Image (cartoon, rainbow, N blue to C red):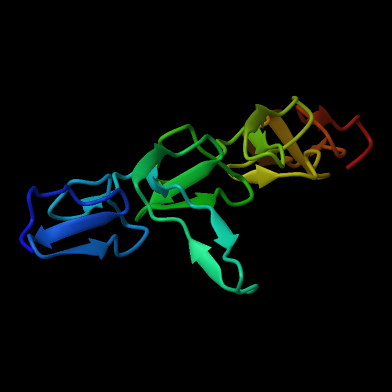
Amino acid sequence: GGLSACSPARAGYYAPNATAEVACPNEETYCPGGGAAPVTVDVGFYSSPVTTSREEPFPGTVVTTMRTGQTRCEARYFCTGGVRELCGAGEYSEAGWGACKPCAAGAFETGNRTCRACNSTLYCPAGTTLPLRRCSAGHYCTTPATSAECMAGYFCPEGSTAPTLCTAGSV
């Protein structure tokens, strides 16, 4: 009963020696088949496929699909260690990023993990999320990224883009 030919390891497995296949160990790696070791997933990618299914005839038994490749991380997500995660509130990412960044000062996160410029009456420091706020009373915002305290002799109602000089006889 000897082998007439050797077969490469199947996708989802690797063969560290010529005697047995070993299942790909975790989400940090993938096994495309035919390898002697699992392949480490690159930063900005996640291991795939990641689907699960119920195995019949034993309802409730969950089988995770073997990880046979890597997929580039989509915009709005960050990928490290073979895992894809949604960016947090006030953050965004481009496809293939390993980390999210806060929306820059002068922009806000739309709720869809993308950034959009604020209009001039709003104050949007880095990482701003909805709901947006107007430049607060007692301050003026020369740009949506900057807020300054109103100076003595001036007044600044909510939404001010410049201080307004108090008239003579008022303080």
